Amino acid sequence: MSHPEILVVLPTLGDRLETLRQALDSVNEQRAEVSVTLVVVAPPSAVAARELAASLGAVVVDDPKAGISAAINCGLSVRTTEKYYAWVGDDDLLRPHGLATLSAELDAVEEAVLAFGGCDYIDTEGRTIAVSNAGRLATFLLPWGPDLIPHPGTVVRLDALEAIGGFDPALKFAMDLDAFLKLRKHGRFVWTRASVSAFRWHPDSLTVANRLDSSREAESVKRRHLPSGLRPISGAWHYPIRWASSIAAGRVNARARSIEARALAAQAD
Image (tube, rainbow, N blue to C red; front, side):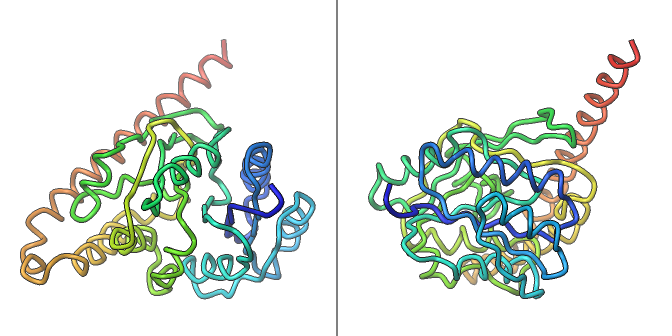
């Protein structure tokens, strides 16, 4: 592997150093199987995070301070010879073999532009709460149902991502959904049910803490991608899906509390 093949973008505000290190380590573990350019996008004031990222081999660039989408686009601008893009949050993880698995899926299908896999929902201690691995169902539901394609467990052809203009800077929560819907016009989506990433479920996660705003933005994105004749009646399925998603999130929260309670009880014994 003489040239980097996968551009991994990790935006951070620098306020979660412990999980940031874990995220960086999980990316670097992929280097045994694939060539990676790791780009950390951080504000200049996040001195400790920037030093940590640099010490672990990342290219560090300044956060433009214009939102998460602009930060990711800033990371994308570092591209040189890379073929694929992947994203990971500063409190998320890539599972062992994750990038190799997904890039192999793309390599196997010439017309494929996006590969995704299963995603483990983990608590603050790294314990698995639930697993999302919808496979083909995720692609079917994408235009009108819940977005079951996890951004941290996704690899995208960079040429296709550049063709759609990257991520919409106006979006705060549903920028990945918007990009996925645009990418459908450029090629196929492929998948594996194997878990290739982990999303940390805790109260200050952006989409968890702002679930209603996230749902509304996602509905707006899906509406604008619908045929014009269906847009006025999209509430007929968007509102039930919002309700179902809220119920599902509540169940994950309840399971997380139950796992934590059992762990505390075991420690007490």
